[in-house]
Amino acid sequence: MTEEHELPAEIALLWGLRETPRRGRKPTLSVSEITRAAIEVADAEGLAAVSMARVAQQLGNSTMALYRHVKSKDELLTLMSDAAFEDPPPMPPGGWRAGLTLWATSVLARFRRHPWYARIPLSGPPIGPRNLTWFDRALGALSDTPLNEEEKVGVVMGLLTLVHGEMRMTAELAEGFRVNPEAFGPAYARALRQVVDPRRLPALGRVVEAGVFDHDHLFDERDVEADFRFGLDLYLDGVAAYLARRG
Image 1 (cartoon, rainbow, N blue to C red):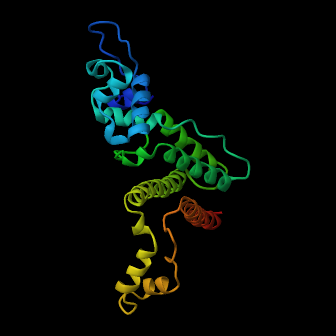
Image 2: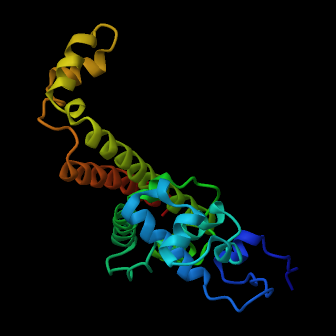
Image 3: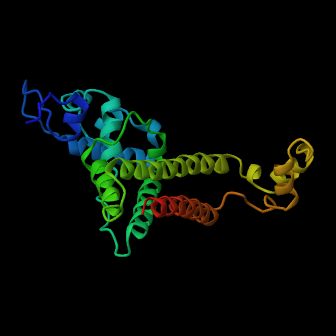
């Protein structure tokens, strides 16, 4: 038998295993209601607007009523980072590559539905019920491969790094484009032509000379999506090559 240890408080909260203090009146709120209201605030006003007081206002309740269930804003952010995800889609037929492709694009789609997600600090590996469900689904896509369990985790974590990087970089570039769209236009290419010395920066010089940055807008959602799929295919090509060596 495995020895059982008391769960850390934040994990018990995520899984609904932490008891609410029973002092005073019967609670009129639940953790799920508080979390849902916080997500509504973040979706409408951004993550910076989320506070215990603002969420209490959203619920038409007192701030102290929230603290009976959620002890801090950090705990609230942890709840939000798990609850913002819907359950993952069923894995399609077609093997591990089709499964991981759907998984990665679905994760990114859910990130983009909640742009504030990119602002939540990563404090550790997945531990909430929704996040672990997604983790399990990705691992399951590799079930029929010759990879051992540790290798499967490595593949999925590498893929998650790719998706998180895309999500965070895109969110920050989108904000930069909103503030100063000119920085993403032809002025960028003209500036590069003036400052990039091909003798010092030969590889970048060839890119500039080839006109790679000569576009009206370097930030375009269609281009962003195409760039992500290109990077995803490269990553999965690497997994396929590794599987071929292992096979």
